[in-house]
Length: 216
Image 1 (spheres, rainbow, N blue to C red):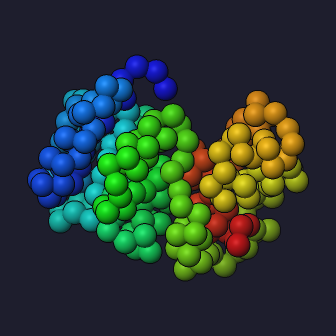
Image 2: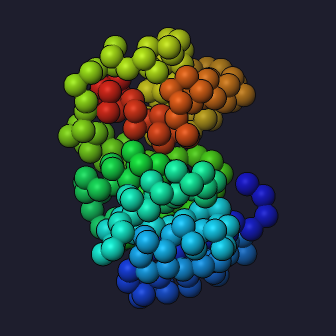
């Protein structure tokens, strides 16, 4: 991440959008480049403003954040998606992550937590809360099991360890410390995990790990 991070806001409540815009706009390294009141406007908004991060409500009247995220992924957008939700245990959150979102924030988050979340996903990292995602995943585990998911069967033992630590919300530095290896080695393992699972990013790899039962 270098320069100013461009942020688009998508929420059907104008008061929430204006509050977020005020918080984000006060930061020298962040800029609000556009706003929309519904997911149906997302593709046009992103096409016009080229944001680095889309801060998107998960529940909207015409097109929700899940469908809007899916549309962005299908369109090949490079924008990172951070969904906003009222409840951490909302099944819509897990569906949004599975659709391609890079993390989620609670609407009751502090301004500091919002800013941290935006910067985190802008750096290409995932913003997950392991306990919340673990509980959501418990309700979405598929029947195939890890052995029935070819993408996961291709992982080496060390790559599997890395994926489990990713699912626990560890950063590359924290994974390196846990495995007593260098950060560059961890980056190589993460890249291998993404390549072998076909995951778009760390978040998608973690969702796959939970849904398959690879991580319990």
